[in-house]
Amino acid sequence: MLAVIALAIGPVSSLHAGTPCAFTEQGDGHVTEIVDSSSFRLDDGREIKLAGIETTVADPHRDARAALTALIANHDVTLRGDDDAPDRYGRQRAFVTLTGSGTLVQRELLAQGDALAAADIADPDCARLLGAAEAEARANHRGIWGAAVIKNAESPDDILSGIGRFTVVEGKVLSVRQAGATTYLNFGYNWTRGFAVTISKRMMPVLETGGFAVKSLENRRIRVRGWVETQRGGNSGPRIDILRVAQIEILNNN
Image (cartoon, rainbow, N blue to C red; front, side):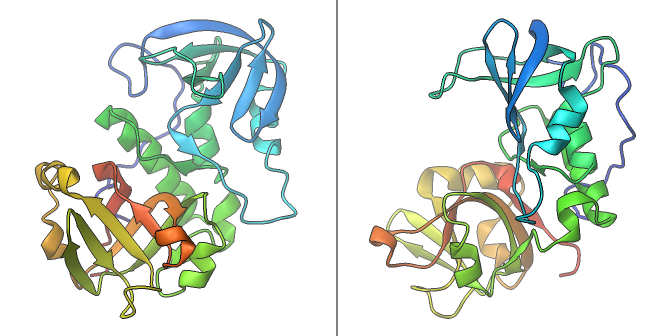
């Protein structure tokens, strides 16, 4: 269990004021189509993207849409969120509950091991709820956690195979180095080819306010999540850029 996520939270039976992830209602509708593992379409034509989670397929033979289909296909749902503006793909991002039951779809997917908790949830209680659901599935090897979902920081080529995807990586920070306006958490001795976490200068005070003294992460094991990318035209090792405090978790086995 992580130091960051230590709270065990049971199934959500209803949402009410004060309940995590009970944001402002943004309407409701009937689910007519499952677009992919985290998106669906309503009878009024709106395409909805599940907020607060990311999906991945560790098993290539697994139907990525099956879990979402089983939960919401042909059901009425209620949408909640702080902003109903469409994203660049025209999708409305929302937290979704089954109308009448209050079952939070994101939590169910995480608890079943069919999704990863995202790191962009501003509300801390909601983030804890979803983080605990993921931790529950991970501890019980459910769904995707029955396979090698977490990448080893010592295997940069394996991490690079997921370039452009939301990925979870674990490893020991061997060094913390600053180059210009960027701080690097290096997980390999070859700084050019090894996996690294990058932190911009503007993010440093944000991390410190969130309880992370970045230099103190040296020689500690951490879990980091985010989108895998490379630098310098792809001639460097895999990188995950830190944009939010929740992307970094210090592991207890330090």
